[in-house]
Image 1 (cartoon, rainbow, N blue to C red):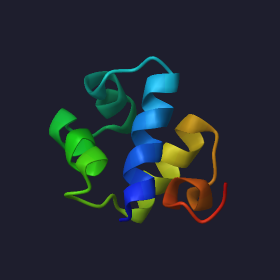
Image 2 (cartoon, rainbow, N blue to C red; image 1 turned 180 degrees about the horizontal axis):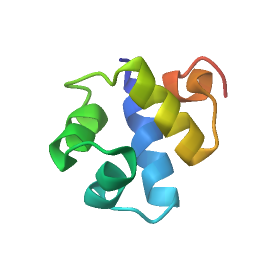
Image 3 (cartoon, one colour; image 1 turned 45 degrees about the vertical axis):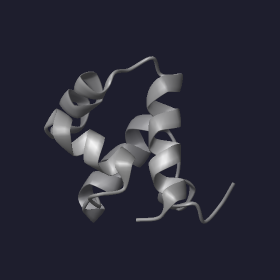
Image 4 (cartoon, helix red, strand yellow; image 1 turned 90 degrees about the horizontal axis):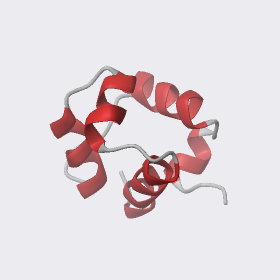
Length: 68
């Protein structure tokens, strides 16, 4: 995943006032997974990308940096 995804995920999480643990619970993943995504060390599955997009009210294209 590109750097834009990492930045946007963290940005969206902070805009909602969520810590990594709270977001992990909302997306049904471990806290370490959120950290790995934000650091660009691991990529989410398509199903998790869909869950994130729905949770934050954005498109997958936005998360991936394909649209502004």
